[in-house]
Length: 292
Image (tube, rainbow, N blue to C red; front, side, top):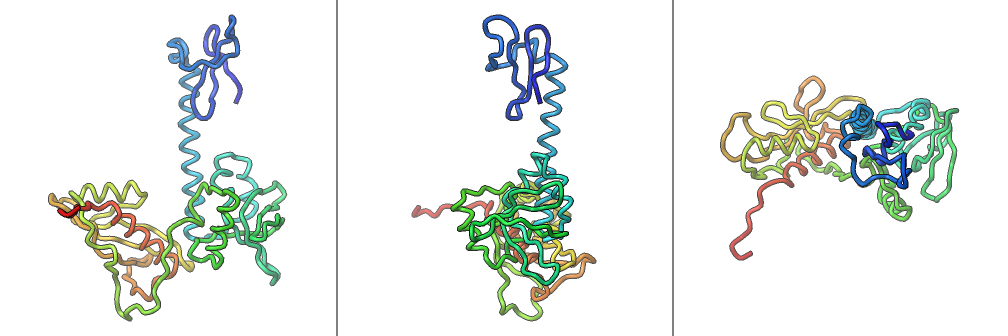
């Protein structure tokens, strides 16, 4: 976006997401100002740019949330869709350098690599673990949840070597693998139960700030795993309890509300559920011992 007239002697523009002014007259013509003069602050063009900047911020958040939803659920994403949204800087920031799996439609080996480009004709440019740039034209791709990536450690090391910073937390996302020796009929885990908070409100506020939904006495997430919807839930206390609160057990329900046994929970739902419980527990009140 270029510079726009904002009254006599000034122009305004968005520079790094902030409304900036410059003078158009006198010896300082063309020089950016450190602050907005009063006449510029109150100009309609400045207000329009502020509202546009706020919209851009909301758009960037929306793009990251959508890409995160694709990744957490490992949903198939049409390559043509990636090509259409790629020119948008907000979409590109959310998608760039995510691990993409594509190809293999005709029985060939799937390509796995960091997404670097998506062209208008449906070609994706990836950087694979050998450091080579490959070009693929799959009909759809997935942005896998990291718990499903067999080469996750290698990908993390490779990304560190390249200085990769992902707009959506994928390869450095905390993951947990489901133990193989779970009791047959168990339906909950208390691994992160017992974290004390000053109030139920404080615990609910932490859940909300982390992006989880608070419904009644539980904090919940929503995950697609193996083609079905699963909701991990953590007990956080009755809504109107006025004493301190503690994190409770973690359990999982299917899309129809049926309580699942731990053995029925898929790898993605397990990892995301434990991640939620651990994140809530991490905000607990920690009392220092007298010896400390």
